Image (cartoon, rainbow, N blue to C red; front, side, top):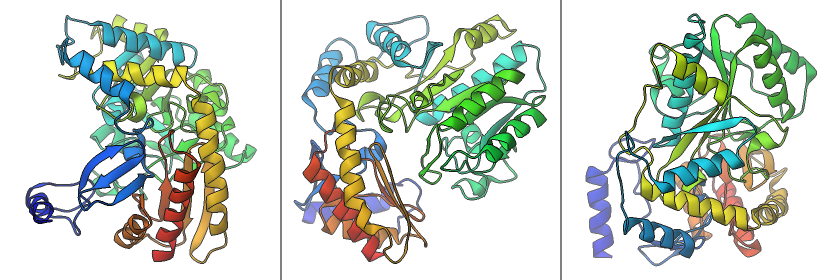
Amino acid sequence: MSRERELLALDRAHVWHPYGPMPGKSDPYLVESAQGVRLRLADGRELVDGMSSWWAAIHGYRHPVLDEALVRQSQRMSHVMFGGLTHEPAIELATTLVDLAPDGLEHVFLADSGSVSVEVAIKMALQAQLALGRPRRRRLLTWRGGYHGDTFHPMTVCDPEGGMHSLWTGVLPVQVFADVPPVEFDEGYAAALRALIAEHADDVAAVIVEPVVQGAGGMRFHHPEYLRVLREATAAYGILLIFDEIATGFGRTGEFFAAGHPGVSPDIMCVGKALTGGYLTLAAALCTTAVAAAISGGDGGGLAHGPTFMGNPLACAVANASLRLLRDGDWRSHVRVIESGLRDGLAPLRGVSGVADVRVLGAIGVVQLDHPVDVAKATAAAVDAGVWLRPFRDLIYTMPPYVADEADVARIAAGIAAAVAAT
């Protein structure tokens, strides 16, 4: 315990944790190890991980296939610059992503993180429109309630009022926003989307949305048919369509990519998070041949972007192993088991005082309260129930690893119930 206290004191003195002040308002929980779906704390407690480490560790922890891929690649090379050089893990990864992606996405730009992949996607869209002789198209269109990352241009397409980036109002460029998309299909809303795109056809370069599920902006679900509306409307005006599949990709919603629900292909697509199974940071922006040709034929002669660790061999190797696990395994049945368990486990919370909504889609379960969550109390209650959750705003939610079994999912649901009762 003395070592644990010492580490937490050092953490409090020097480590700045995400979305919080320095020092933090409360001490974080000290993790000693992790395996399967369980986190082992330094004090000996074991928690079922209901968060997949921010939705990335879909295969759980210490997976032997992913461990082996990482070790094997480290024995060949851990990193090599991607400018002027290439290597097999990156080539295999790009080829696999093209094979798995919606039709038409043929080219892959590897990036460091999800937010950076959105930066790249936006840069692609703006540079392509410029190269096509449309210099006035410098803005982006999206709908409210979204979240696309913490770097500056992605922040411009996060929710401008209710989002975590409202602090930067007046600093960031002002984009074009539609209302939050409804859960069910509404022709009036669809008509408003079409009209807004038509109104801004001369100044919007691209429409960017999270397909089917809006993540950190509010964990909202919307009807997949709105994606078809966006595809048809953007195509009519030569506006590019970007899908941010960083949170939704690789099976989380019940389809390999959320774009598969309506069967729609974007011009540019971002992936990340679960790409490496939660082992290393890696993301990608995929685009069509038309987008790549426009950029490559323009005055710039190419895309002006090149992260130092672009195409990192370790990350690419473990991503390849993660994608093989998905392709060779039965991820759909695992997601269905989680979905069924969450529906059954969270259903009793409907009608509970303070609960505004309960919703489940694929391996995503959300309990929305009618008041802000007391994060410290809710987290402590879940931990006492043997579950790791990370609530935010008015939401207590879960995105478990796909390897969670029925008992694990039942415990997660019980942990959510405990968190609801505590706040």
